[in-house]
Length: 202
Image (tube, rainbow, N blue to C red; front, side):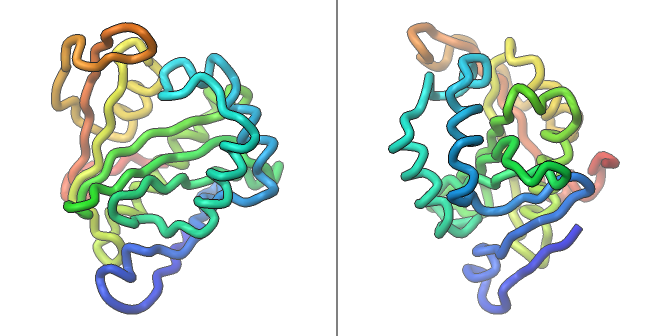
């Protein structure tokens, strides 16, 4: 795996340079050439089932791609989308989101969205581990804690988090109004110290 860090202060280290390379994937900024693939999986009803949207317009997608192209990962108060490119096909197959807390930049919330055609092949797990290696790197962003909220019925997401070694910290009963109904949430989390102790093999 290859990381590139700018030299400078802690703030500059948080503004990581991409890409990150894993065995089969490249994690990078979204680019204009990703637009059609991004629109495709973000407008798939099955992919959107547990997400905060039903569909997106071309204008919304273009705005996201343009904004993400100049956003630095680790920017406090912002959500960065790590574009996940499949090396063998040189195309976007999904994205990983990481929202850094504005007033506590050592903690963040993560989520992920992958094209249905590329689910069940281990790509999401590989990308997720690559992102966590980067964000928990003491010589890089040096994050303390990353957490995720997931509906209990979203079995693939629950399994991904557990494969990565995340702890289930809580089960919140009907705690969130979501798409016309009250839903439960599991909260999962990982500390930097835990990641270096029990990081799963790729």
